[in-house]
Length: 258
Ligand code: PGA
Image (cartoon, rainbow, N blue to C red; front, side, top):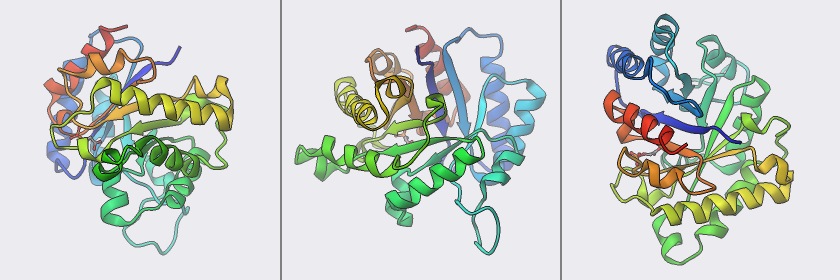
């Protein structure tokens, strides 16, 4: 019913040249492979988007392009920012928003994330909207309510009439880049709570069509176990997306569970 999704978040890694090489390597690794039912997205740094877009175009690569951030205004005096139309111009069809690194290091709020989602969706760019709790919240056993609160704020007033065009990534902060993966049951618990929250707000039929990904030390060795859970629809992948072989292996391992 829902396609799985494996999305690579390159974060602040890969120069333009290196990004082109990685994208080409991934195109080579995935072309001709069978992974029907798995949508693949790569999200390079902003200055790499155009180069990766050209690789996708020339190689007819079987993956889509996403950005890692956007600003909600259309244009103007917003030094350093990127407008949704600029992403469209380089054929980016997805954009990560609300990553915990942006919330933590750059002070992004749920209100900002909600505005970004609305701006992206107005331009037909699919947000991959991140949420997730810090370690102390998890240790206090308050992780579900923390994430539910984020979801309510991040989705406020969104039009989910096409639920395939909004993606959520649950990324417990303590599991990001630490090698400490949440167990598949931990991921399922929160992804399920996210879906129930969406069902309360938007109705069950809509909630059942929104992809909810897990992120945090996802890798080839644990992806099958994660996507086997009923509410985990794939992964947002950091470290393991920086090599064509590990990322393509994740795509194929996810596909093998279907
Ligand atoms: P990681 O990062 O896979 O390196 O833990 C995931 C993310 O932050 O999106």
